[in-house]
Length: 251
View 1 (cartoon, one colour):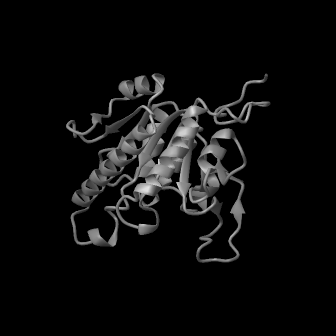
View 2: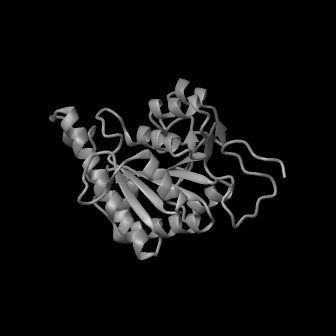
View 3: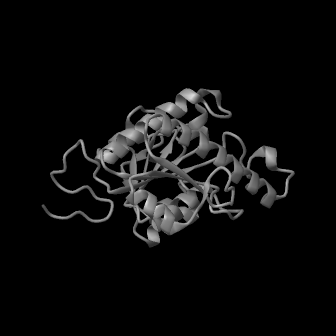
C-alpha cells in the first residue's frame, strides 16, 4: 500500500481504524457548557468524552487542548477594565477547570488520561513537559493540555497548534459551532459559501477568522493540516478520525 503523506488518509484503510496515528483535538470552553452557555454541563462533557473514547479505541493517540470561554476569556467584555495580563491568566485557570472536568468524564469511561498544565498547579495536575507528554501518549493515555501556552496575549488556538507540533500530531481538528470554513460568517450572511478545502494562504489573506492568524501561520510553516468541523453534529469527531469528508480542511 502506498504510504500517505502527513495528515492524509492511506488508500484502502479500514473504516473502523483511525487514519491518523496522532490527533490534536481543539475544544472550546463553550463546547463543554452545552446549552447552559456557562460552566460545565455534565451531560455534554460526558457526550464529548464518549466520542473521544471512540477515537482512542480506534487506535489513535489523542491530545486535547481546551479553552476556558465558558468561565472566563481574557478578551471578553467582562475583562475590558482589567489588566490584559491578569485577565489572560484568569482565562488560563479557566482552562484548567475544564480540563479536570473532561478528565473526570474520561476516567469514568475507563479511559487512561492525564492533565498537563503550562502553569504550575502540581496539586491538581502535572506540569507540561514535552517528553513526559510524549511518554503518556506512547503508553496510550489521552493527554489534556491546559493553561494555554502559559503566556498572556496567546489564545488557546495558538496553544493547540504549538502542542500539536510538539507531540508530532498528524492533524489539528478544531471543533466549532459551524460546519466548516466559510467565505464570510454564515450566521450573519445567508449567502455564505463553505469551503471543502482551503489553503493557509487564503485563510490568512481573507482573514476568514476560523483560527488565530498566529496558529494558522504556525501550521502553515510546518505543513500541519487543520480540519474545522461542527461539534454539534454527534459522531463528527469519530468521522474526522476515520478520514470521512467532514467540515473544511486547511492545508
